[in-house]
Image 1 (spheres, rainbow, N blue to C red):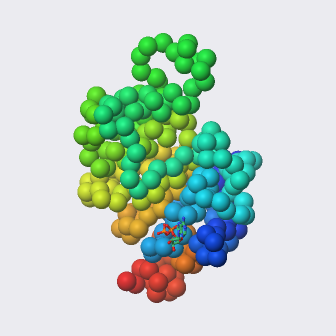
Image 2: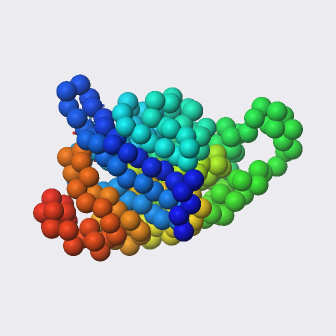
Length: 244
Ligand code: ADP
């Protein structure tokens, strides 16, 4: 069920690099309870949309999370507002254990005072993230020894312990085995139950299996939007993307 106050609403997002317009007035919204996909061929503007929403690229238009406007805010402030993202290459501390990675991320959320008060032991949010991501059995392994899929799940876990309410995931299943893709789809379903999840993806099988709503971008514009069945039936989508 959608909860309007906890939704991400992007309207007329426009991003330009010099004279080149990478994103032309793109609008989409995403609500807790759905797994929202942004798809499109290479260069369609998917990552640029996420970069603009998270303060890494300058964009015009609006991107509201609840009653907060994100565009124009510095990236760190956007993180503090509860909007987190992952990158195509997972950025975890390879020498530190899974637990230590999560603990560092949880520390970013805590105030210095609560850090001083924190008793030794594992933060409850870290325990929850280990359970939610299925990484409990590898909690003491150095993150560098994890599989590609497990590293992506750790990154998602790091967003969860920071209390992210919006997760923007850039090609989370690239390079994953089929089993890892399925596990990732199931994880996203659990995470999305009470958070906004937007997945930028190339992988059509993954999209078909796990998307609840899809926006198709092409050459920086919204080409189509709807359920998986609706966008697959759209001849414009078949022509530029699915038909290949
Ligand atoms: P996608 O994620 O859909 O593959 P991108 O958002 O990465 O597409 O890129 C959209 C377009 O914007 C591409 O043509 C890309 O070359 C261009 N682009 C992305 N970032 C920059 C940048 N920093 N400077 C100039 N052009 C860029």
